[in-house]
Length: 602
Image (cartoon, rainbow, N blue to C red; front, side, top):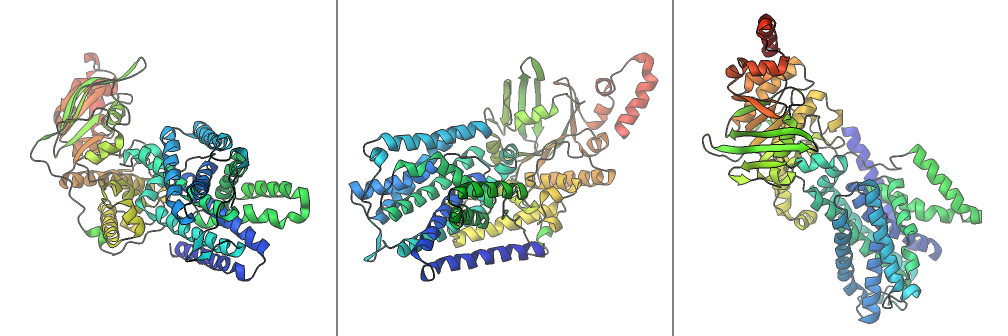
């Protein structure tokens, strides 16, 4: 872990050194080199904006030049028509670009892959065509006579002065991008990139978070557009084509998606390397393209991949403290009331009209053979899919149509039959993602790093470490989730669910794949969870575990409930034996008795 931290510090030290060298460039280089440097700075800003969408959130945007154009045209129009100063136009450029992020974000929230690419590409082209055809934008000739910025009476018009302005803009965007990546919003984006369904199921409002990715990226694009207008004093639609969007995307992918130093390196290569190859004349673009192909074959993850953030516990005893106590509810109050719930997939009936209740403080197991509909019940309860009919009440309130993240916020959390961790995030970050929705600090306060935000983040981190300690994973807090042993991954998924502070925890086959020692430890953990005040609804095939921890058991077969009662009653119920073993004939009584013993003792 120390090696990784040293490597990360070395990477950022190199980045700071390069930034310092870039700031000193005007004093050492010709105007031509300074102009190339400004182009690199502009592409760096644009790359950092697109990196929010593509790198952080894992979304695709083939029309990013649209935000660039909106910022540039806003500055140009306000300066030439309304005689605003450059600085007065900046808030409007940011506002219009951000609004356009909502326009493109909203219809694409549920799209992925090819459909997302088509919509974003269309948005970029529509923006360019509108600029080409409107009279107010100057049509294909564009807008001329954009005034140079001035600051305290000093006109920023020379190449070196504009370069210094570009570096100042780049530093601001760098700080903004770094703070975004380190924030809870950055964690939410990463969780969506890793597994969108799992992110929604642990409390991340994925639709809103994806829209915020487009909005934040659009803000940076609009910011760069204003700089572009100030630099040249004239703009036209040819500067905002599809090729421009692709070039910005190359900057991000070449450098390394999600990597801030990588984006800057990508901008240096994309904007600087063609200039170094000018001696090849017409062959330089071809040589540049061949070089890009070779680089991507050798380094598909990018030239400077995003490093994995490592977490060191602040105190050695942090995990020994008792974890937070969930919201209390008195006595045997009914937490969950399911009434005649059905779920059909086409002509297949997965759940056929079941009714049951879950009482506060109990461990209720839902068992049945494979295909009985158990996981479908979980998916209906947690909003992953909607029941075809029936009603579900949570603490007396209907859950009809509730999105998964809203159900988590209400106090119901779950794990999955197949482990669904955020594999490339650390164990600690997995847990933090499960509890981030409980933070109350505004995002802008968090980005500014105000004392109230730092205090809440410290409490947040300490509680996250306590949950890791509760399941016995404190020592592995900084390890990548994918690198943990199988049993530890199961426990981490439970810790992540518990971190949302649920009142009801749904465990979907938590013992699957565990050895006997791990199963006994899991039994003890489930009892400890109940002792915290968390009610448990359990799906499990391991009868030793079910009979050892359950207060009540519900048995399903072919989508319906066939038995319900205490463990002893379920063991003696012939319908349960028949459902599991496929026979209950009287002339096979001996075989049934032997099978029954094997079933409950396995």
